Length: 452
Image (cartoon, rainbow, N blue to C red; front, side):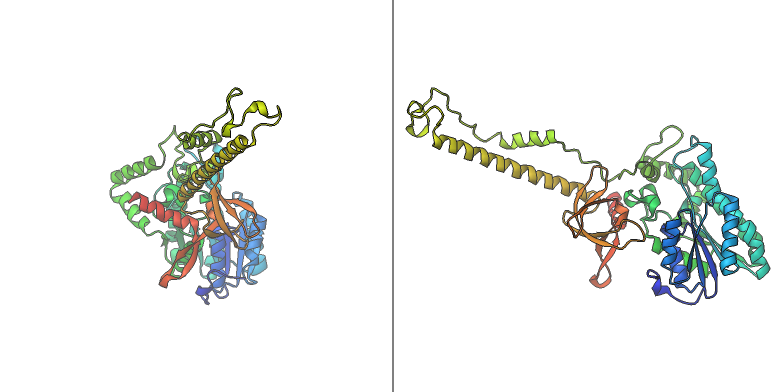
């Protein structure tokens, strides 16, 4: 059933056959829902992950159908277009959304460069090769290409992504110039950081999130509005227009600024800088949440320091008279003076209890400090889901794990560890209403404030 995007429901796409590549998750999944809510007669969800495609299609109120295809292969693109056409009729809107990212620069292996090129560029070309003549013959059609802000600017840390996305923009421009008067409308979707699998585990989206991370639904809503308005560029992050203008009018200034941005996230290493977003994608390490460093050894040192001002435990020597005037000679060999033993045991217990409380307080403070790095507090009520299609489950925050994931406790008391992109938190909305928002959005705001 269509959920997100119902508020946009209308007849703008009534009778239209729409296809969305990469529709199993992220922006593609959200696009599929929003297009269905706008009245599309059929939404073909195309993804290399068949289960994900089926899950999305099942939520589209009876207008969705799933297709599995590897878009890095020309014959697969042809096959899926023919399959959709046979099942639903000619395709009116082709949303070329699927994309991949390879980390590094010139040193990235040739096969990774080639696959990135095929998915991020050639898949658009192959689709147009088949669809444009058909659309022109019917009087027109529409292409939506997810080109990314990297296609207008660059992607620090990934040369293959930057180059291929620039090519996607160039192809979209050529397509519009060449066939616009024949009824072919082209829309280029160019967001910065979006809370999808590509940015999972990276607070604020890394270097691509300097202007905030948007949710897939926000980006999809903007894309559909642009598509219906037959707008060429859709920039969900409006700052991109300013950056693109600077890049053309003052390239030296723009390049210097990008170098500073690169240095802020991570310095270049060799020919392949793996900083910012790309570094996060490679390591899944959260930049604002370093691993917890306290060890058992540190705890024992801290415990000893907490106890160092207490009096030493008195151990009576064998020749010493016991406390309270008891003479050890008067007691049986196996029967030590009970009063002294009781006092020593009680003193031991008190010191151990005090040390345990101090250690627990320090551990709680450490947990709070670590969680604060990802915008959370111990005991905070949140909700999570294990995958995009799953239902939300309430939970409470417990700790930040060593791998950077967040440790939660679900309603049944089970421990759960999840990356930040699977978690939503409460935030105050209009008129004081409490709303759910992605934890990544909170992180983006916190990072922006930190940088001001």
